[in-house]
Length: 109
Image 1 (cartoon, rainbow, N blue to C red):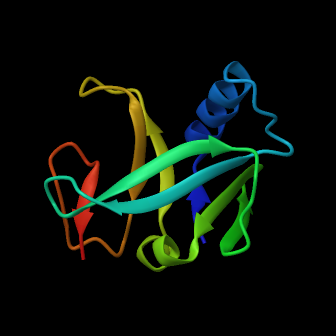
Image 2 (cartoon, rainbow, N blue to C red; image 1 turned 120 degrees about the vertical axis):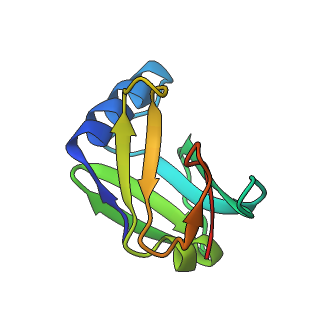
């Protein structure tokens, strides 16, 4: 399961609304793909459809879908939003990551 912090929830709902998505029926699709300076990188986008192999979660009012393969890498992760001096954006607090890059967009196990 992925948890969603309060600040991430507010930003997700704001961005979904701006992009024409409905927070009550549409999803945040979270995944992992090969790439990045640490080997794996996070992928986050909005989606209106659910696939058969997706796992569906809801936390803090945000509906999240994750494909089966990515789920194994993301168990226990918290999605947060940072608006700090290093740049604004979503941050994945992943307890499974052994190493992350300086920008926080990639990791390895």
